[in-house]
Length: 177
Image (cartoon, rainbow, N blue to C red; front, side, top):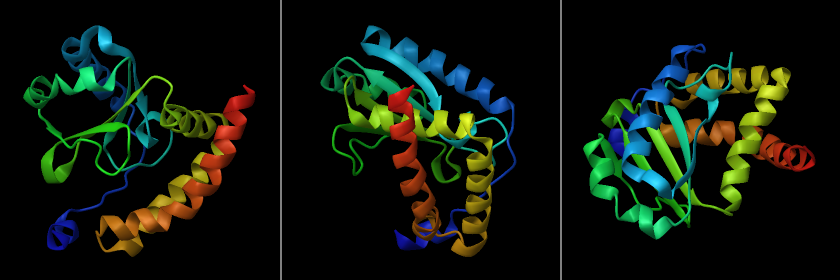
């Protein structure tokens, strides 16, 4: 498995306004499958922040009424091209990937009330409201890409200090809004 991680190319590119359209298309497809269990389907992550450099992977946050009911739609979600990954390391999450080695989409689903919904929303909104932080994050990601030698674990570790610091600030800031 480690060998596969090194062969997957990590690319950080300038912001692409088409990312919004790609998200909207996927939102329609996911809504058609998940139906009324979906409370909210939203674009998160770096591709949702105008002007922010990002890996060209659309991150989607799905808030559902009932996580176990979402599990009943795994086969249908898979027909949309997603690989069903279960919790994939985060308790209370359902995670789906699309695009194989070239990853095009990540879906993170949580039940209403889960703190991870706030965490993801707060970080995105903080970066939008604070362009200087967004710019700094873009630089951190570009440097991490250069230093990681296409190893996703190293790439993530190099971004971790920034994320930990600003995610905490973002959650505090978001709670005051």
